[in-house]
Length: 344
Ligand code: DAH
Image (cartoon, rainbow, N blue to C red; front, side, top):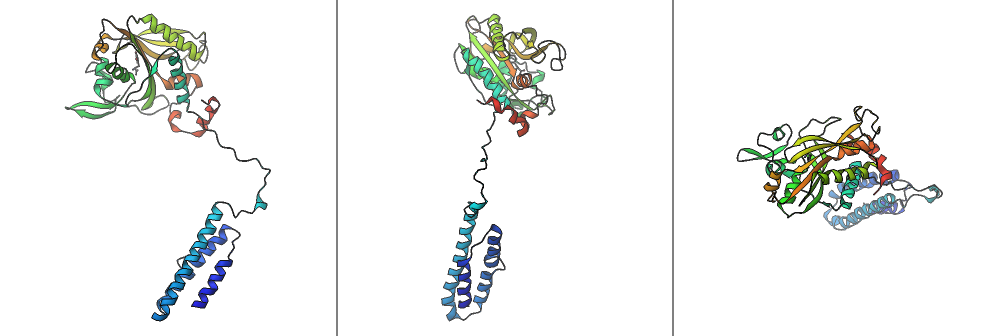
């Protein structure tokens, strides 16, 4: 047995595989479950006790050196050190690193936020899991308002038998948090993800993104609201983009309006995007309802304010003409790659 081991040891030392297949064959031959080492250990069981003392040590050493040799060669193959330099064409161009790209929603969001930052707005954020107070009650939603229905809102937890904790349905909740925790003046822009209990389709999703705006101070008027949003649209879509305000209703603003802009795709001539009207709606807005100010501990006799809220997906649609909302969250690289040129 000793002779056999000596012979195998010499073989192992001389072993110099040309490729990974040969190394694998080596592993199977010596270290495999039916390999030589296993076999030697079987034979070892039947030698005399005296021989065992000497052979045991020799056998263990042999096993260790076979394992070490295999490990060493394996690492060499993995690090490519075994590749013959003759196979490498040093004149070939290298493989470049793929440059990542920013998500279209994140591009649009930072563009919008930057415009408002230049007007002196600060960026504020709030939690995505909200309570009824911040998402609805403080914003003047009557108890029986349909927006509180299970249909629209993902409620998570009840309190005293009433639905209370929910995934926020809009970023207007951040207004409340901001006003509760500070003193006027407030001038903030609040981007974030919101959730609604909707079936996912090309035109609706159970989560999307909004940007909320809030401006509260003494003597803030509807004229300030119009001027600010007009300026925003000129910056985002270019000088000459027309705006119009239509009366609307939101529980948390009075008066309320929806703002349309002249269609960015057909410039007002009429197309599929604007349903041939020449106008597209981009946001909701209004003067902060005095009830909301009071709910947040702000003197509504002294202060007035305006607020607005827009969907980021909608704005991105008008910029990039993305007809299926699902593309924004599917992470298909072929879609995402197209925004590569607009880095940072
Ligand atoms: N929260 C509204 C929504 O989700 C959007 C909105 C409308 C926000 C008017 C406002 C506002 O701040 O004044 O549809």
